[in-house]
Amino acid sequence: MVIKESRAPVKGDNSRHKNAESFKEGECCILARIVDKEVKEKRIQDFPVVSVYPEVFPEELPGLPLHRQVEFHIDLVPGAAPVSKSPYRLAPSEM
Image (tube, rainbow, N blue to C red; front, side, top):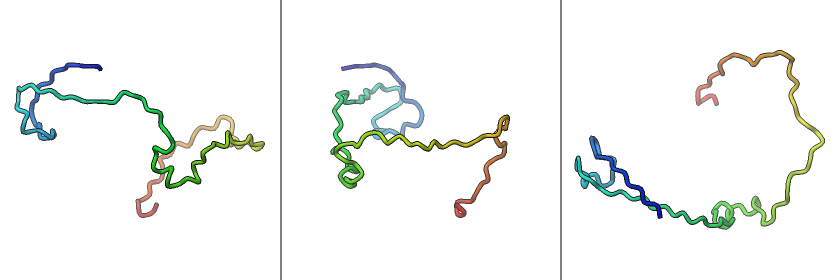
């Protein structure tokens, strides 16, 4: 268990707090944040989307993709600089 102590005076607008009425300027209060540090092993059944689309998530993974003979590349002109032009803007209705 890790306990850290810090003091921060409540000043100004404290209406963002759920218990704003209990905070008064200059008073001390204790705020606690509890975090479960135990690392649990995640199972595929723990994700709801897996049960909705079982054909996408097989029990056994088939492995890495096959090596392809065709490599894709773009031939560039030697010494050419990237185009320095701002992108064309479209209205949301035109997209």
